[in-house]
Image (tube, rainbow, N blue to C red):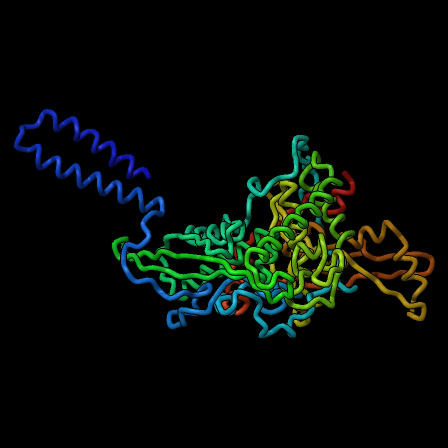
Length: 499
């Protein structure tokens, strides 16, 4: 744009110089001016996205990113990553979206559905933390903000959007615009100019990263992440623009979920948007119970507690169930069970609530379990408080203990479970931890219950290991490696309880 402004100024100056020039130069200069003006006009049209075809050949439609330089130009898409296979939020854990499998159907891939059918559930083997978390706790807490109100979509800062490249943001913007468009499924298209060759592996990765970022940043697009709709991509090569590509994205709804729409695209998208409204209403009902004039840390704690009181761990949910979404945790799962959720459902619901409360957060994916040798795919949250990052696993904090009178030590266990103070500590053992603490947890003495009947601890050692960049091709998660390391220590649960 600066170049355009400078060009206009130059033309304006030349116009006045012409007035003093000999007549013999005027025809030549006028021709030059005409050509300059035309060039400016063409450039303006291009920047506005008005040039439909600069060079001829339209390439075949492809649903999403190609599988690589030699990939077929049809059949790849990027919309529903199966939360139970190796997709961005794998069903019981959290995987990542996949350029290849996404491209195939833009919906959940079924290859490993059985393998990931259970998330790294807390059961009773989470762990506390015996590490010293007293550092920086002598600092003063931040001033409280009494002017806060629940935010709208336009006011929210979407974390992964800020971490991806410019061209990936263009793809993200196009996908988001289609998902929000009332005309989606009716031939609506979004066009963007990119320099990456759409038939290359680079584009496949960028496309998947943009899709991962979109579905991680926007929990309200749960129907996209769950494969209820898919993106389709076609492109033009534009030689006159230095070999750039015009990418054309469209969106098609999938009626495989058994809705009563009869395959009508308009009805399907209307049903998706109606479900979005239900999610928003459920979130606002919880936010109405929160004192938004308090600090971010106090708000995050209240929302954590409201979430685990609302949701419950639905271990029976399948790969394509809404239990993997914020909608499942805050409204209902695909079977109509209120609050039925798996780990990614908890994480996305917590992120959604925090976003609307004005607290920066995101979801990360990886593996969790009792040890590095015994892990399953899992999803949890990162929350930013006063510039520092903290990790939170609301799924594991939502502990559910089933006791049998025949169980050894039943009386002591029952006594521990009935102690409100002890159980409140247990239900926050994965709240506001550092990455190192999550990476290797060992319960400290604070998680031991003692009475005249003896002592017992309800927690065991555990690990949370994020997906790494080296694993992205396998996990199809290209955004978790972009998340920061959590090093915040001030806002531990103990500190917040003492304020």
